Length: 212
Image 1 (cartoon, helix red, strand yellow):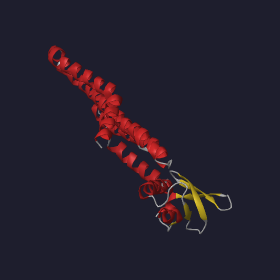
Image 2: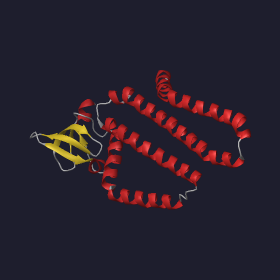
Image 3: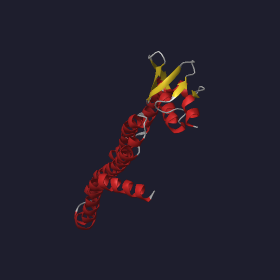
Image 4: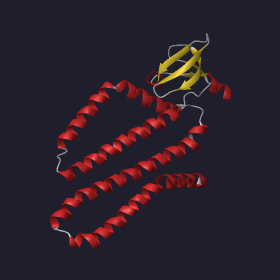
């Protein structure tokens, strides 16, 4: 456990070092500005600079957090995902990474815009309505992704397991995907089933019995 923690810490340190150095440089520059430059410039000019300083600070924070999340994802890919036989986590990690990146930048934008006198209330309302519309339109896709993640955790079946599908076919597990899973039937046909159908139905696993 200690070795795993050390590897993760080292990966985070490597990935976020440049961003942390950038933030450190920003803080040193800000300290220099406060003590050397701020006293000799006008109050109006200082007030105008505040929004740009705040913007740079928010951007630095986003970069640091983004690099830390990327480091954790990279560590997981190198140390955990390669040891699992399913490709589900290999597909989920890039999806989660991209989604978090979008979320970070949207939050950063919502924090930065008020610095420039922009009222974000209407924007937040539009984003909320848009998110609801997208969620409703893609509810089947979202349900299948969540179901695939739960299949990876619960493991009712593994790759190469012999199982009986809810429809009655005896099949061999070929792949557990993000949205759908693939199976090989006894007559060599490929059967593709949405993950949500697998998660809410009874699955008979013959391989678990043989393992016991």
